[in-house]
Image 1 (cartoon, helix red, strand yellow):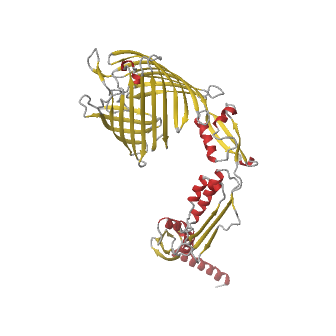
Image 2 (spheres, one colour):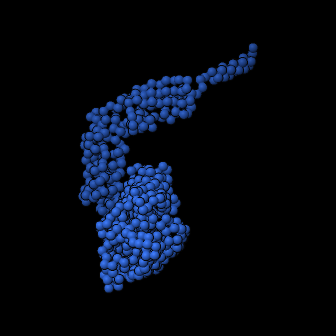
Image 3 (cartoon, one colour):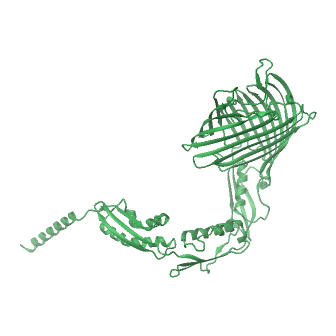
Length: 591
């Protein structure tokens, strides 16, 4: 065999051997199971996240890759534990190959953690005395005696820095010459020493408004701080909230111009996007108390450069007709005053009464001790028929109202309440056909026990002292029963009764006193769907002639796109005069 032939034969033989070797080589194994013993909870999760080998649980990997990654795992586990204060862990491991893949098992002994033995945070007054800074200092972690956890330490530093910046110390920074953390592995100790140079506390400068259809002099009344006030982020957020609450604007952006700060003064830029000036509303509705109906409305969000507002609405339903108009003159400032003038026509029909009344209202509203206070005059005139008796009355009376509401989410309240207090009085002869004094209180409390459960408590109390009850229009009498009162009874069906002269059938005429209470439990089996069980009780009555009426039932709840829909079926309890089921349908907010 010549040399060329021999070389060709050797090449063919080598290729054959290589082919056979490759064909007989073990195929890539699928999957690696990683188990870590000796750790649990957050430590185990952190260790697994650091072990690169765990990434191949559902991926093909060769034997060489598995061994290489396995060799790195103890170092990776140790690095993960160091962030939690364990600087000297011991990690032992085993690696096994099985037909279905590989199993890597690690036994970890954490050892003694490095604990904080000294904590010194230097922060000068007045920065140290601020509530937000004190809160950040009090929450600093890790504390003395706790393991030195790196993530908690970084979060705590950031919280203090954020509190300083939010309260006007815009130049605050950690002094670089201060040793921040000294760790002694031998002594298992960590000494934390931090010092801030807070610099000067900045003040709020000129506020520039852009994009509004109002003069700056009007908008400046919404600024909730005095000239030269110390910078605080919460003050800027308060301005943003106040401007957004006016309904004048579709967008409000309040920005501190830090790069233009000079001599400790920060100018503020407010960019405003006007909302749609006129809003038209309309639609159909159904309510148990009112029947089927429709409503149309107009809201003019601002009438002029002084921000005056106009609202008008008309409702036409089976048992209710109203036309209302209201003109508002806002006087923004610390107490958010407003002068309001309104006119209203109302025709209402219930099971025992029909009334037609016109009213004029002039009042002032303002924020007062956490309440919205309303103080004004109310003129009411009209005719009515109740229990077959005709009446006509004109009454001019002053009234004062206090309203307070708190809700974590107005669309669906899990924790919140509403409280309304009202007092009014009139004297015969002063444009009044009778003298009276009336007070009323309404309260509602909502609490969510979990994502799926809520309890709702509701109550109303009222009392009237009147010279001539027959001259008191139905709007000023107390009734109970209906969607928002005692379910199981019809609208205004509960109260003192008198025989109708025509039919001799007793009909409700209303009372001088009111006492109603309700408890309701809701369970939501889906995010927007729930069921309810409730009990309502109370009475409208004269003086001390209280006789509790009780209604109970079940309901369906739907968080619809247009608001909460409540469909209730209720029945009177132990009432010989009232029987059967009543259906109640209400659409509207919780509070």
